[in-house]
Image: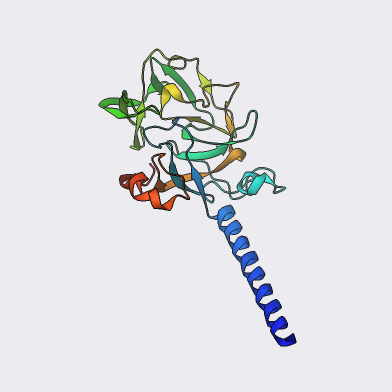
Length: 249
């Protein structure tokens, strides 16, 4: 009887150790390699949709305290720091108000001057090349079909991506010039008329490079809202199959 008790205790101890090791490995991977994120809003349509799940590389821009869970690491600035490239889709901690995670496209680097003129983004005095393509078509939360004007933007580097623009006279379609301070970047949502981003200086503003969490790399799951992540039995009908394993430009 005593031997059985010892074996039971040994088995319990082994299980606890295995769980602890698994948690530590997950924390290390999440902190230093890749972290999963879920998209909660439409600010990055058409690139990202509500219900998309993606991996963010934590090493792309180096590490700061925001690389760690709850930003608990006593780190000042960044270690192994590297600036984003213009056009990167990045996750960052919102610098004003509650430091929640935001995901936007990095459009301005330190020293850049940006301005919106009639819905067209100008960088350092030059308009970003933009051509109208077919409308973006999907359904709103009530099931109604909606069509939104869609444009393909192409940066000087050749990087290209799609944006939405419902009107060229939106709230932030004509702005003053934004000059990005040293040590900061400027981020914008691809859904230009429905994104609270760096154009709103009192809500988001310029993003300290220390606040960068990582670069969005690839979608690994996308649910259309008809199933929660744990409702596996609903997956066959709820998954947006065409979006799985889509790399992010």
